[in-house]
Image (cartoon, rainbow, N blue to C red):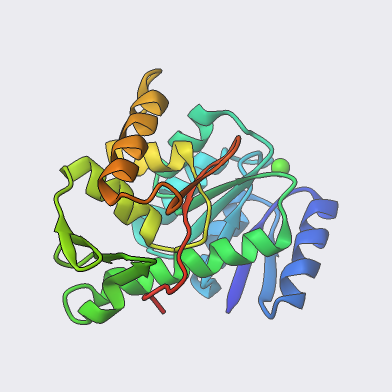
Length: 229
Ligand code: CA
């Protein structure tokens, strides 16, 4: 897998490149936005810094999305929620705040690659769109949820939230990312709304341990038998 690291800081780029090479990626680098766009056709996945010398990383993200579906993971020192939401709204597939953990980054890359394949396969390969977590079976293709074989009725938002978490069982989804995916926008009340929906989902699924709260970060589904490959 060919990984394009867009990063102007030589030390950060070298450290990231080393970690990712050890994980089996073929790594190449761009130090500016212009270089990133020039090298884009060679990339299977892009790690994108926001603070670049020639242009804003958000602008690079927008220009990548104008002509390409390549997965983009924003990797930046900017931790504010508004920046994260903005990046995701521009079409970034994920967002990580520096310093990044190499193992988490690899997991997130695999998740966004799988997500892309899942989108492509939707409607053709329904088995691949079923997630089993304990007694809960989530069919992403036909939007049904069963607990112990019995159907559970969810609202549209509840299902969208569950589906967002179920795309990669075990992976932690950040609150801002879930809000952006399920509600599409962010305002001051969004995180409270997210908490309320998590609460109602847990109650309806009858298993409070299924959706785990990762303090200070977000949520993840604890899945003992992920159905996606
Ligand atoms: Ca930078």
